[in-house]
Amino acid sequence: MSEVIMSEQKKLQELMATCRARGVSLTPQRLGVMRALSARRDHPTADQLYADLIRQLPGISRTTVYRVLETFVRLDLVRKIDSRDSKAHFDGDTSLHPHLVCLGCGRVMDYEDRSFGILQPPEVTGDGFRIVDYAVTLVGFCEDCQRDNIDR
Amino acid sequence: MSEVIMSEQKKLQELMATCRARGVSLTPQRLGVMRALSARRDHPTADQLYADLIRQLPGISRTTVYRVLETFVRLDLVRKIDSRDSKAHFDGDTSLHPHLVCLGCGRVMDYEDRSFGILQPPEVTGDGFRIVDYAVTLVGFCEDCQRDNIDR
DNA sequence: CTAAGTGCAAAGCATTTGCAGGCTT
DNA sequence: AAGCCTGCAAATGCTTTGCACTTAG
Image (tube, rainbow over all chains, first blue to last red; front, side, top):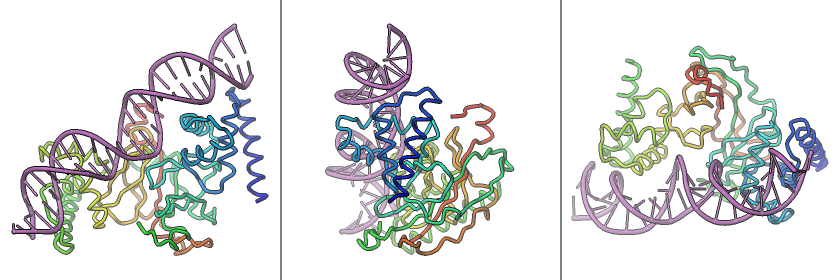
């Protein structure tokens, strides 16, 4: 728990610093989205964040959540993750680490071993493709979905 | 070129064998989709395949392309790939290998070194997540998109 | 023959956009 | 005050679905 709180505080400070440095407004919506994202240890979709936020920030719109997340990605505060459920998921931890994607419920989580799948791709491949990033995704079924036997 | 032809032939034979074995119909549409997919060495979207097919199989519908691909995935003839462009891409090679995803044009291709990123994830993680598959995706810009300087 | 497969049109979702009004700096 | 942000509603784009017709086996 203290870990989550810690990173939440740190993340909010990072947001404030970045807004100042990059000259973007620090709005209650942006603060709220960052807080909502940091409060979870899974990697939620825009809509899940909207559902979380509507309680604390009544009147916030889905559109704003999408736009704020887009801004955060542009500012390198948040990483957008491709999942298998045709929804974008978001991770407040922008460092490179492997993810678990559940085929049952669509949840995206961190894999416990953060050093797993550390690769050294070349900057440029033999056919001239310039590599700027990579992702390692472990796919399967989370504990809950195994129990529920919802194997899709 | 002979490689592509080879794998196309092999793939069509695999399709026929699988249809027989699993009791599903071998329709011209299914044959066409498999041929269209095998004819490319990138990993196209359903819509790209539809565009390729409309010439050889006038009258084929987009819906059918989607449905045929879904069937192929179910029959393990084709693998569905998550990309970054919010479109599903399809790969006739179902074996595990790394992909290149271009942020410029959205193209998905094979990475030349097929043994790159071979990992040994555990069957079950410490928190009970059962791993059944994984993906290694290298993200960047293909040669064409570097030339065009379309860096989005 | 008959179940499986196809085509069409319409629906379904996640996400984006245009625009008018509101809020940060 | 000035422009960035937000909210609403409508639009977009990929994909799926309902239904009647067709075709493979």
